[in-house]
Figure 1 (cartoon, rainbow, N blue to C red):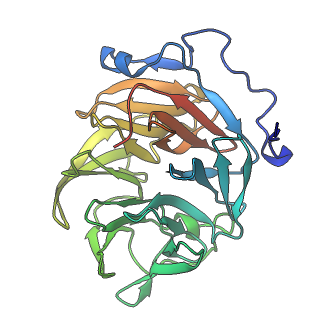
Figure 2: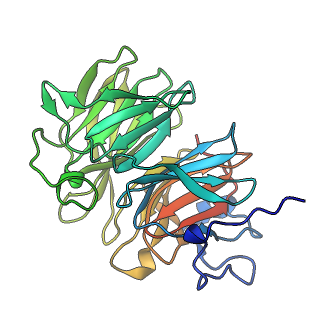
Length: 321
């Protein structure tokens, strides 16, 4: 029998304890609509630690593993679902942040240090998809999603330019925007009215695009846009985050928004779930802010949550879209 050991660098925090009872009190219904997504005998699990700021989880079902970024440590990590082992997938990573897969299953990454969006080819080579717009360097691509037509949409705030901790401190050359990379490779700006564009995701039918405005005042907001082909319209605030801080997010098959949440008030740390109409319906409490998340696992019903210093998971009664 082969025994798989978790690398000590990434071993779960020994102070973390899985709930000793079902249902897990860390999973909170704020509205009756959330009840059907809870599994009474599923608990929040801590899969590993050892990161300074975990981000950008993306599931590779064909290999049964998860990749996620550790931005300040300039690396992408790999969680193996069959063994529970966490290892370094790529180092350095260009201070990679958001990750996703394209329609051919290749890794797409946003890199702060190199100020670009890249694709990892099947043989490991890295192809630069975007690093400039109208001759000027991008800021620090943050999060990225791929539409069914093969186009790649990403946010470009200046967060990675603000210090040497998650990139290189320097001046912006472009305003903060949302961009679209056409399957042909052409890059086009699709939104420039968002204060601090951050996490983004499409609705299940791709008729809507949600974008976090992380520098909106007085509160962070989640904006929504109508998607028509390669164009956005009717942008408006759907959710006022109040004291919460939305970050990365994903939609489930019913159109609910599962949002990384927290910072400030510890009772807000974790994941906040919103119905399609913007009503908060559930919360998953974590001991730290969740930066980003994705659905994965063998049946697509496992929520992976990348928080500051740890990676967490929870089985839920829905799937990602």
